[in-house]
Image (cartoon, rainbow, N blue to C red; front, top):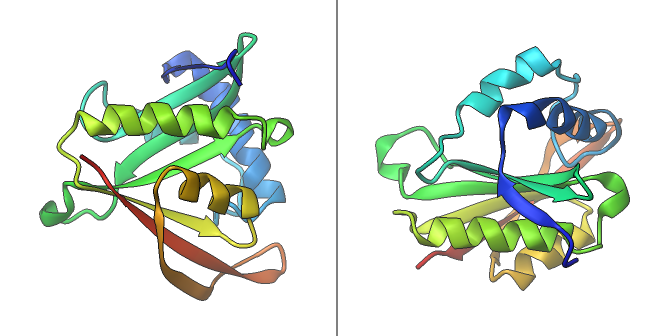
Length: 167
């Protein structure tokens, strides 16, 4: 989707990002959060993304509207994990499969290539064929599946884990 603008997230995006995320909290198993967030509560999440370094928040904008976001966050809190990140992509539900996720992932991986990051990891709650294809398209390889690791919307959910080396 060539008309997608991918840029660093700014505080003015937070209401739209919160609305987008809350859709998945309430209607999908892509996140294991089960209670929607207020914008104020989501501010803590927003504030941990820096302007530099491997923990990033990128926003996709389409016709002036937030169409999705991608993040890279700490994989684990212990210092030896500092060169590993966990990546996440959320698209507006009506834009899934239209190239927004690909545009965000391409931009995020370009940013991470310039950082001191050795590996990117991603967990995909199953079933989610579009997300599995997205990760495979960007060079992530499957590591394995945590079976029935979460319970959401009245059913057990498996999570398939992927990794990708970074230059």
